[in-house]
Image (cartoon, rainbow over all chains, first blue to last red; front, side):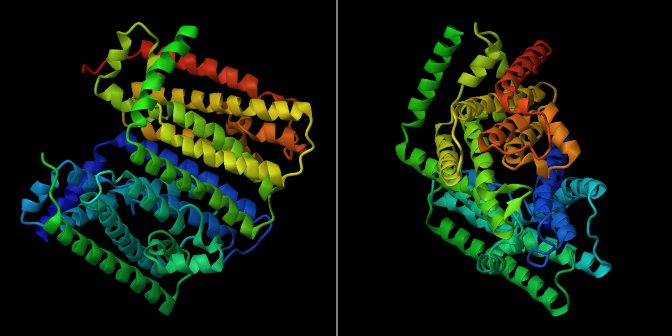
Length: 262
Length: 267
């Protein structure tokens, strides 16, 4: 536990080393927030409700999604894949620490940094311009739990597609494809509630819905009582399942793969 | 100028030959890029599942905006998208190499790479363009054909200018690359939607400061024969080439200014 804490602190520090990158990132998230907010608001010129979202819900959703994008780290994460490719993974495997546990602890140190410095500012800027929905204390508490689970689900998925590098030398295509799937099926590109019912239900059931749409639904108070427990349980299920799959993949890989020399 | 084109063709030709050496990798990459670029358009379709019109624009009209923005952006991305890696060149001191060679720095930088696999994205935009043009009933006249034909290269020049100005940021800060993304990738995304959905302050910014409104909004209004929902003067419909030329001049000036103030980190 003490070890995990130390690794997590390094995860935090690594990302806090580039302050200008943080400022630039906030600027980019805010720009995309404005774009998506105005596109969705144009929809509400003709509608009052889309899939249970009113205009304020939809705009709040946009800013929540832009704020969560770095916390759950939806974009390409290559670190493990590169270590496999250049052979550093061999050193990692010699250590008395499972690489999955190492990177999970690292990611859980990174996430709070990104939440505070990349998540809060775009949301605050959005709140200056638009009327946003604020949660009840209970929903707010549930949101943080849901967001933490979302980070683990996202990490579990990222770990698996990175491990593909054990088998494929040219893993770039796989990583890009996986990232694109998350962006679309998580509700990052457009809220799942705007999608056709069948597609929406599939996305909610798959791990993707747990990454962006579910925490946002919780913030917006769309999940109460048993439904709230249900979505949190689903997130927890995917977190455990993906970590489990990742562990199996890693074990298989280390048993039969010849590491690139280096 | 003739010399510049010659140098560019020689260097880029070598790049393309080298990228085609690994045929399977290239084909897989291009195929991936092709499908992935449909995601943006899927978003447009999902949105139009919920409404018949976005402001006064139907799905075919927005598809035209989308296609014009995508094709011109994808061409730009293929030709100069590697400027995204420029901050790295400044940081590790490799930019200095360009300074001692007897050609312009911007020319050398642009000619240093060419991402051929992004041709798949151009193709994706072109398919949407064909779809949009075939599903719209456009009353074709010679001026309309001309405006449409000229709008694509103009838009590419506008995007390129934005990219070059963005790359100049690297001379002052090497970890601010994402600022540029907001204007390049963010720019094409904004141009894919009708401008009348944006708030006034954003429209002013995009119309006059970063001239994204001239990428496809004004030319599309003219080609479609639509009244401007914002009631702006109609001569703006024909201004894209002039705006493109002005952007290029500004970008070149900013680049020259930045290079003159460049101090090497020592590499």
